[in-house]
Amino acid sequence: MLSSEDIMAIEEFTKALDWQATHAEENNAPCTARVIRALAKVRESDTATGRRIAGWEGLTLKDAMPLRMAGGLHHLLLSGQDERLARVYSGQITDQSQIDALVCELVETYDHLLLPWLDGPPQTNEAGRAASIMGGILWLAQRIAPRFELFELGASAGVLTMLERYRFQLGATEVGPVNSPMQIAPEWRGAGSPPAPPRDFEIVSVRGCDVAPIDLSDPASALRLKSYVWPDAPGRMARIDAAIELANANAPDLVRQDAGDFVAEFLSDPQSEGRTRAMFHSIMWQYMPADTQDAITDAMEKAGAKASPERPLAWISLETDPATFRHELKVRYWDGATGSGEEVLLSHAHPHGAWVEWSGG
Image 1 (cartoon, rainbow, N blue to C red):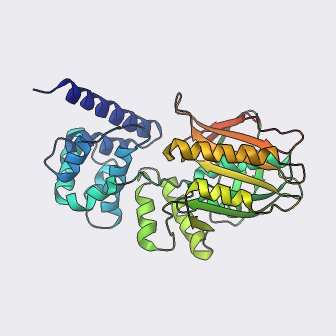
Image 2 (cartoon, rainbow, N blue to C red; image 1 turned 90 degrees about the horizontal axis):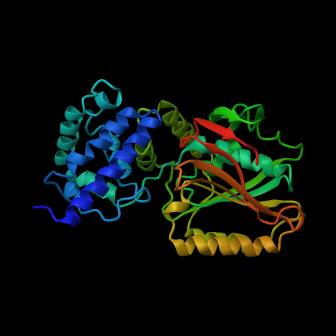
Image 3 (tube, one colour; image 1 turned 60 degrees about the horizontal axis):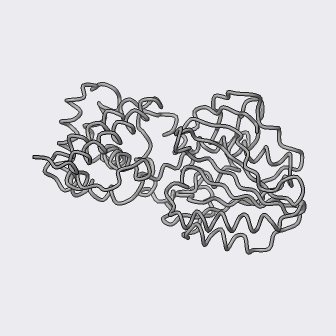
């Protein structure tokens, strides 16, 4: 007989799994949603992977455990180890009971390969999110020094660390190299567009950090990153391929470092006059320990108190509101004059950048 604790754990698991599957469905990935729902049967299987899922503690949005497994299963197909999921991802098989059985078979066959995918959160380095970040940069460029030294937290493979090489169509505003292999043109909604870049606008440098950066020039690492992309989202796969092309031509500037140490080190370096130093991050803040979040906030606010019109400081974040699950673009800036660190909500966006709804603060 199940104890009340066991029943509560099952209810937690079911709720979390349903939320993640529904989230995939609502973002045009119904095939991925079916694979995620099949994990309910995997949980009951006599496999090491199933037992670990069954004993999972704290199954929350923060853990993203269903997406860890979805990445491992997708990797079986991308690596050529097993192609049976191709018919699921293409929508040829839609019956949930058939998919449940197939996913369980795959877990039984590749138990030793799939188990390690549960060790860490997915690294969903999505180039489409750069639309929001660039919108924030252009908004800032109208208010403070338009030459930017950018630093990114949780950069993963550095896909967004290369945003100065992307071409953007943000409503009526265009910016970036016309012939870039990365063309970012989300559906633009809301009131107006980000302001056009001023004549002296320039992204001088971009540097990123991650505790476990991925090298896109390494085929195995690149394939792992692609595994986390939902296979029924062809636009996302194309963007990953474009990022790999750019990284092979000129690798993003990444360091393996804790985000708190990275921020402290970056802020301690001398800042050139006439340049804005700006920190940005996307869908990673939730994965950091609370003490690291507090340390970074404290460091930015202390540095902001010393900012001046000649040496401004800014903070651009695209993160999930835990109450609404909306991906919100928020900006803070300090310049010792018009900006004293107040948070401004500029837009909210599709999780993978398919659309942006601009409010412009």
